[in-house]
Length: 235
Length: 289
Image 1 (cartoon, rainbow over the protein chains, first blue to last red):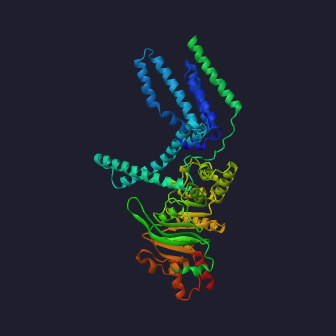
Image 2: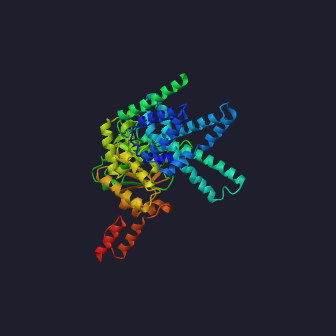
């Protein structure tokens, strides 16, 4: 998981996750601007933001390319199906690219556990954040296990033919399911041994304090986006 | 019942760390893991439970931490029967920590620092105290630099260290290690030996379960040999290891180092010593010229 790796090494790692979320929202909001020049401007700024947050160019290109297929197919549909034609298509493409960039900026500077830690401060989200954290952790445990099993099957020519592949895949899924049950049981024992009483409480990592200056800048930029769009609607 | 090792411990019989009386346990699947097992584990001894897979070591450890409850019999901790109430178990698990065999299913938090803080947070300690303990545990295990790393970026040996730090941060007086050397390379095993020796010197009670006779020989003062849920030998390490083949039949062999030592002694190359590590044997041989 490239994004996960980048996020853990980002120079913005210890900037407060709340701040980075606000930045994401503001940037995404600007992405919906009715004036294409705004999006073009933003797309020009993004590479620098990525650069300062410590994402190397070669990885950036790889990540930006990821949703290209979906964006293109969406754009094509709009071009041929909507009354706006090419103009609407371009608008959609620009918007999607800005939102994707903004999301990527958040994802490559904020590891998921940090984000969840921040969200878990809102008690309503507690259940969700706990499940998400365990999912995140076990994604790595299980994918490692699945890879091990896959290699063991390959070593015994498990994927030699089409039928063999199907059978091997079925066995792999079954094996993984059984492993999951065992892992859950072991996890339960380990939790009990550490006096788990129903709530996953850990100490905060300690982020940098929220910068009021940055936040008010973001807020100002965000509000101007809203105003501009309202003005566009009215005017 | 007469116990030969009472003499070995002298008059001081009060200092039993754990005691089991007629403990039986059968898993829901019908596998009997412990059969009417009775034993006493002395305090201030390096205790090793030796036995092959399926001998009941892990099940016994789960009883020592109150995670499993004997279906028959009683388990005592420091002379008192374990209370299986919420507060009784909380107290027991605060004092007795377990390091499980597979660190991957034990570690869950987003970063090493948070992972180690989980136990002390559950003990409802103030935040400053939690922070202090986490930092001390990381220092003891020499993994301070991994503090902000997520668990999936760690090597197997590092994960093991984190799992031990987890228990240290709870300030447990007893630490149970279940198969601690599984999957460790020889350097990892040597490092682990140093770690547990240091913990023992700092006053921790160490109990470990292993099937590795040579590893057990390098560490143990006191050995309990298990087979099919029963105890076939227990006592001071020097006595048990010498007779281990008689006791264990075909399932256990003598530690390699002990085998070599005995031959050297018979041939007159070595005095009346029992070196526990290869280096010590080499030194003893050097001295005799």
